Amino acid sequence: MARRLDELDSLRGLAAISVVFFHFRELWFDDVMLGSSHLSREVFTCLIYPLTAGYEAVMLFFILSGFVLSIPAINSQAQKYPVFIIRRIFRIYMPYLVVLMLAVLGDMIFHGHITRGPWFNQFWSEPVDWRLVMQHILFIGKYDNRQFDPPIWSLIYEMRISLVFPFLCAIVLWLKPFPSLILAAVMSCLSIFAMNFLFMFHIHTSIFDTLHYAALFIVGIYLARKRTIISKIFNHLSRSKRIVIAILSVTLYLYGGYIWVKIVPRFTNYDILRSADWFTALGAAGLIVLSLNSVSCHRILMWPPIHALGKMSYSVYLLHFVIMLLFVHLLYGKIPLLIIFALCLVVVVASSWVCYRFIEIPFMNLGRRISGYL
Figure 1 (cartoon, one colour):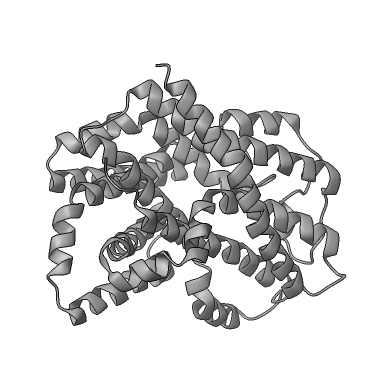
Figure 2 (cartoon, helix red, strand yellow):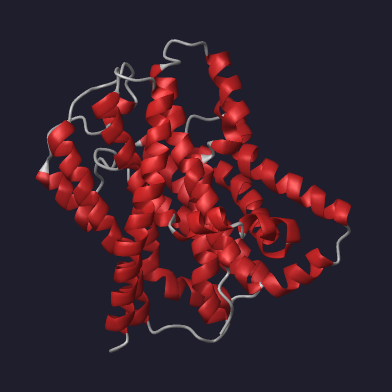
């Protein structure tokens, strides 16, 4: 049995924390910097982007999922489809339902506008609509996924892709490695062109977004498939070349898509901006390679606090916005936002550990037991 890739757990943890900082950055823009010039916002964003690359973190999550989920199939230990689905449901969906119920309860108690700016007031803005709750439970239709716990938008795609992942993985592994990347590019291009076409008719659907994000899963499968060869190549490089790869990977991951988004609007108003994800994906792939092969990265990622953060990264992702909503509704206008955020950060870490220990782990164990009967 292959060893558990703990470095990737830690990498996921750091990415999850960047999502937390990203959402506080948006709150800061929405309140403290309300009315500031565009230039001052851009400068501030660039300076703190290494800590607040939230959307980029989600792209990394998709690639990591493709990487980790494909390893059993690559090692000829693929799970039966019912076993895979049951374990994914108990790993992702069941903890999500618990946090969703907490978010709905918070909305029932604290709904209403609270801050000066419009961004934060999108969330918990109205009394609970139970039809919307049911849509969140079933992941059906196009609905407002910002109302209760905005970060769950990515879980919709994660679950959709999980339902077909064994088949997608089988197709990708049947292809030769390079043609599998061509498949990913074709899927992404089809998604972008289809959304451009529908945009002209004012038709909005997330189906083609799913196709695009599934392409990022394929990138993860490719990296997992070629990980031994990539490791050999990387370990034969000189130290200076490794440093160059590290700098390029971090730069592409943080700023590649950001710069592309700033350039593209000059030429189009359509959803071609989705192509920016591929700059981020290339950087994310480099980060995964570095995490698994760099001694320095290994030491950082296996530092106990970071490793612990990695273990509970999913709970951090699920809980942090709900906690931020709660603290802002309780404390906004009474103490400075920075202190509110500091309190949020402490509570997010503590509650995420509790969620991981008493919700995630029991559900994972239950999923294993149930799937063991199949």
